[in-house]
Length: 341
Image (cartoon, rainbow, N blue to C red):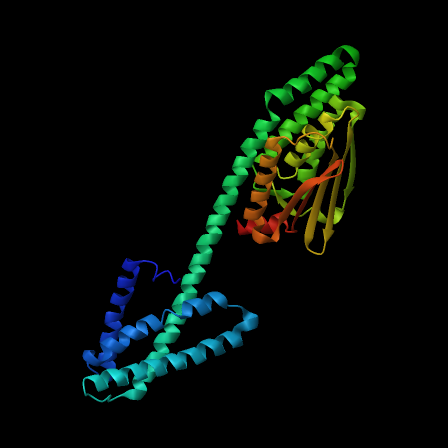
C-alpha cells in the first residue's frame, strides 16, 4: 500500500497540497475551480500510482530507455485521463472547456512531477534504510565484542588456562612460560580487533590461531588443527570477531567432549567474488548439543545478514561424527568498506 494511503492524516495533507496546484491551473488556463476541483481530486489519486511502478523499476543506467518510455507513455495516458475528467466535469455544469491543450500538457507535466517525487522519496527511504543498517551493524559489532570478551574472560576459560600453566610450571617451566605468552597475545589481540568494525580476514584467522595455540597447550595431542587457506581471500573484509567464536565453539562443544580428542579443520577459499569459510570438528554423535551453541551461531548469522544483506549465508549442522559450519560472503576490501562507512 502507498505510504500516503496508510494514514488518514497523510492523505488529508496530500490532498490539501493540491489546492495551490488547482489554483495555478485556474490562473494559467482560465478554467473555473468548479470545473477543476472534481477532476483534480481524481487526478490526485491517479498521481499516486507511479509509486508502484517506481518501486518495481528502480532507476538504473542500463534500463534508462525502457523506464523513460514506461513513464512517458503513462504520463500521456495521465494527461488524457485528466482532460477526459475535465470534459465530464465541465459538462456536468454545462460549461465547455476553453483550453484543452494546455490542460492536457499540465496533466502530463504533473504526472512526470509525481514520478520524480516518488523516485526522490524512494531514494530517501533507501538512504535511511542504509543508515539504519549501518547503525545496526555497528551495534551488533559492539555486542559481539562484549559477548566475545565475556566468553574469552569467563572464569571457566581462565581457570582451565591458569590450571594448565600451574601444572606445567612444576613440570616444564618453558612450556608454562610459552602458554602465558600465548594467552597474553590472544587476549591482547581480541581486545585490539574487537574495537574495529571490519578487519582483513587474515587478521581474524590470526586471532583464531592464537586461541587454538592456547588450547593446544592445554589439550596437548588431543587437539589437532588442519588449515587450507587460499591466500587470495586474506584481504577480504569481515566483521571483527566473526570466525574466532566459531573456532571456540568447535573446541568447547566438540573436541573437549572427546576422550581421545580430535581435529579442527579450517578451510578458506575464494570462488569468483565469494569467500567460503568452513570449520569442521569431530563430535560424539550420541551427545546432545549444548543450547548456547545455537545462540552463538544465530548471532553470527544475524551479523552476516546485517553486514552483507542477502549476499551472505551461514549453514551449520552435524554430518555423522563431524560438525560443520560454512560461511559464505562477498569479498570486499577493508579499505573500500572503510571509505563507505
